[in-house]
Length: 157
Image (cartoon, rainbow, N blue to C red):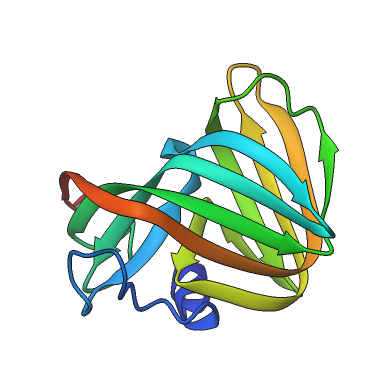
């Protein structure tokens, strides 16, 4: 199984709540998303992506043909901590990685996502590629508002 396929399986990746189709897989592409806000609520770190760029596909999001959407999301990391230079917000994400346990996934977060265990979300932020690391014990991604259609996505041949 490919890493993205494993991520979809790990995070129960049926994208049932984006309003486009309950039959498609969905994943956030970190690269085209924007960090609007980072807050601490009790022992939870919340990262607001406004917007997040979301791929939906009958196959693997970001690989197989599908559509691109923008959707505001909140990434909640329980027992979370943030290290690195946040800088001025909002800021575009240049790249990122997500690790849960011993599995690592590059640039994609499957939707819906509720994973428990040791989680690490590493974001590289523009314009200077500064590194932000969020550590915690559980990660939940919540949608905020409605998704908007952006484009068709075609797999490169």
